[in-house]
Length: 520
Image (cartoon, rainbow, N blue to C red; front, side):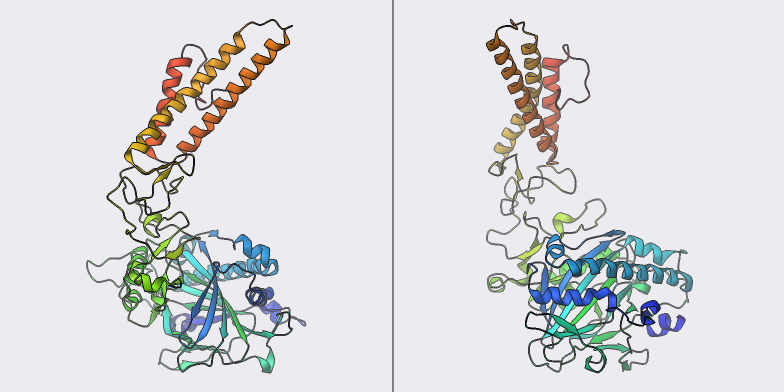
């Protein structure tokens, strides 16, 4: 194990219970087989999978998910609905990979001299991981280029499956796994410490654990102590006509606040800053700089982000996304935006201002902005972005002119000017006063003495009370929705309106009630 970590940078984990079984089941519970058939069926929405043309002409189809600290993000509901067998098997495979990653972190804590006893385990528990299901398929004759050039990963380490190969077994699109003599040799090549490229023997149903640069560059270590070796590797998809190569891997990243250990004096950088620098370099169209952000030697490191994107792709929320058809001509690569369906920009609108952390955006896509430019800073708010009903990060004020406009209760009531915003504030105060007024009026109507024998009077009183209660509850819930917009000024107007209404109608009538919103 010591040599595998410090000299080779990679080792294989074999499930001995399944390897010794007399009739072993499919590797990884059939997860890769089910994934290949799911992708082959073309049932998944195309916006859920990402296609990349590799350097050698191979097409790579990716389904991405993630784990953030200890929060495991599930597969999308459409995946579960369209491919239930794959979704079920994927849960078990991801759990198996997670257990392997946690166990390896504990091993590193035992063998590597670091600043703290459990630094690797802590990094795995606090950092985020990218999880990718890949399918590789050749549609043209291969070129002399590698499918994935020689590189080392920037993450702490990666846990990945041995690749499996499948071919069509029926006209209905069913796939059968290639085994024995029909299975091609692995396309995975590992560079040893002396520079020799070797093709490791990788048993079926095994997991590969491979060190990345992050295992030493972003983890503090004792002076002079040996550091885990980052394994450089490349991938060649074998030229097997009609075959499909399926693979799954989880890249463990350092925590966002991890510090670059070999930075020069005055050049301290966190891993989060590194990723942002990489993203900005990619947005500027400089992929060579993007792949080396953080002083990594050019052409040798991949982060599974902008440094991995080809010339017709941009980095958008943890993956390379294809530039939409027709947009590359009307929009330069540096001008493309990564936005969610409401028009919020990633990472700008998803960055926590107090910590600098960037939140997730599962539904972000690449778009080409139309004129005028996306940051319309001359108006009350940015009318070039889709308006929002709620700020998802924290309270916001109307002083941020580059932010989207706020929707007030109804889709057409967009507060895109100072006048409209002022009217909304005044209307909110009146709604708050109206809640107390209706409660007061309802109590007054209920106190009116009527002749119980006159049915018309009884019905009229009942209708009046119910109508006022209905309106009071409707206004109260409208106030709740306004407050939930997290717009500071509107929230304050909710409080002012309710307090003013209480002072006018209720302070001398009702007993003190902390549930001021409804006063039911």
